[in-house]
Image (cartoon, rainbow, N blue to C red; front, side, top):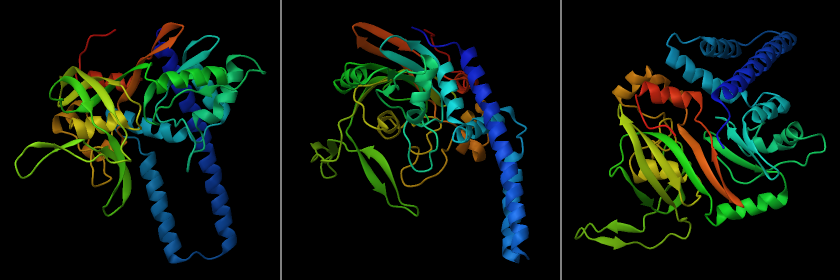
Length: 363
């Protein structure tokens, strides 16, 4: 079952963008007017308050500036759209997910998850997929439809195949298939650099550690089972960290150009951020737009090679807005007969492939 057409997805994103602009634009003007009225009631303005207000206005004007370069404009629009998802009405979000539906039967609904939308709620998150599942169910069926259930998760920045179940029983059965590794998952990623060898398996456990720097933070990293002895250069087995989770990823190079690669990835296990960590720290090929795992000791935008910046027509100073290029392309689900579910990458992913001249054999 193939994904919904790119035209339908672009139409839904364009519609959402209009909603975001309408909502955010009107809201910000109303908020500014209210704030101005409130300031008038407070009386004389202190010099430091006035200076801060001027700095804030300057920041807002800079954000409203439209970049001349088309590539930078697209990067910025995607970042703004992702932020705007947190301000739209839940009904608008549910409608967008309905338009992103690629397959459904009596047991499941499959959507092509958009970029920048979190699956679960959390601090600072107003909109997520979980919260709009009851609304989406009504849009797909009728007013008495049972809320849909999550079967697995994708990161906020990851796009592609996501399976929802129509009942709790179906959800439990599908979750068990994921847990027992009976679901075949295929991802596509654009990475910096080319893996050596070009095909293989990364089998390195993963754990979470605190990074001690000027701004302490937590990241997932590798916990290798072996190390090279500094005394004699021999490979020796290390003591297993109890917090480490077994993680196995199969990878294959599909194309390479402009210091980047298109990789096909099959995570055998389902550890959080597994693909990102294995590519960045295991193969030395971080995913394009993965600003978190491109550095270990600091939180900073990904540093791109000159040839990559040139092909993308992007300045390094704007690289922080570059989206994560990781897409859940195919999912094979054994529900009676095996369902082969495919979602096409989003437009920005396709555009990057073209700009980097990463040619590959299409399905």
